[in-house]
Length: 159
Image (cartoon, rainbow, N blue to C red; front, side):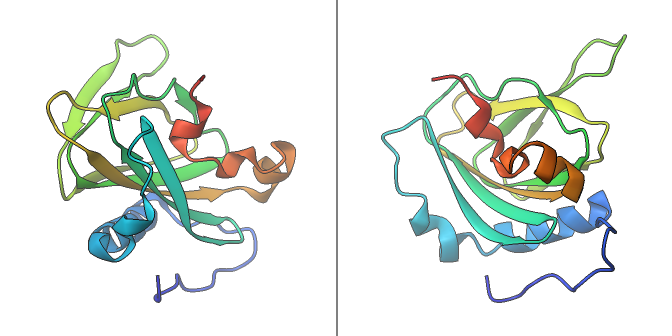
């Protein structure tokens, strides 16, 4: 990525909508970074495209129909997901409510704040799916989790 996000005041995280703009910009540049996601023998692969301060940008390849991620609690982390290729099935839950499931196809995405709790997977018959994930983490979360806040969403899968 040649273009980098503008510097921000210390301790100020970008709004989720700003993160979605970054995810869309990176995702639309798919042909430039796609060759780096080369391990199609695995269920999924991921690469860190950019990281500076509280901001991290990942590309995730969902090569086969894996079970997807476990539920992810984004306490202290804002983010956005953009689908560059294929389709993701996204399931969001809120306490006391039934899960809300939605599919996001190519050139679509969503953003979230620190209260978000969700999981995602490649949709059936979507073929290989590639998504861009942008996170802005509170520095205290990164320190508390020994850097695990920077793991891409699929890294939390067992196995």
